[in-house]
Image (cartoon, rainbow, N blue to C red; front, side, top):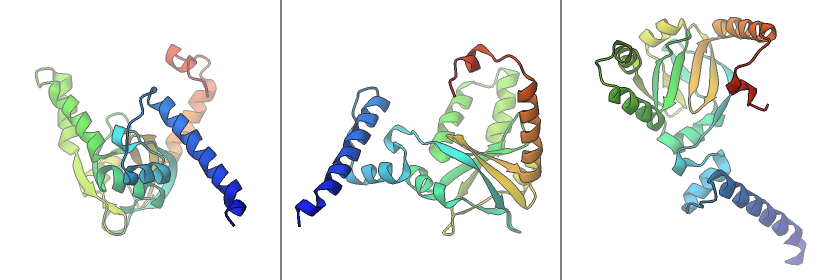
Length: 205
């Protein structure tokens, strides 16, 4: 009976060794020690929470209800619960007509950097007023929903149908039609652009 399970055990061991080697590479050869719970979260959620590394990706089309609540896609919920206990911060994007949604620890890092800018520089004051001034805490409720306040919905022109875009350490929240229009514009611009910046030239996709 024991021997019948040996191939499965060997496969599991090989996978664990592979993940161990990947972890050593990602941490620059420095292996951190995690509790059993943290290792389970790494395996389930695909992120190294102790180091603050978590990647959110993908385009999700969602609906806002009559109260302005949005159900966070289930694929993100466990990660957000582990990373920030479902505590998020929503603020405005200064370049595009959308909102930015950060896990609270990630936002707090940004907020500290903004505060350290001081308020003598007019550009710094503008950033502080807009980003910190519009920053609103949001919490995942028991149904995995967050409430987007009316002023922020108005800023981004959000109607019922919205697009939630994973952007690494944060999300962007767009009106779905605006997102579709902008995406087509970016694709058209990309087809016309013949040259890339040095930074993009070094990026291998």
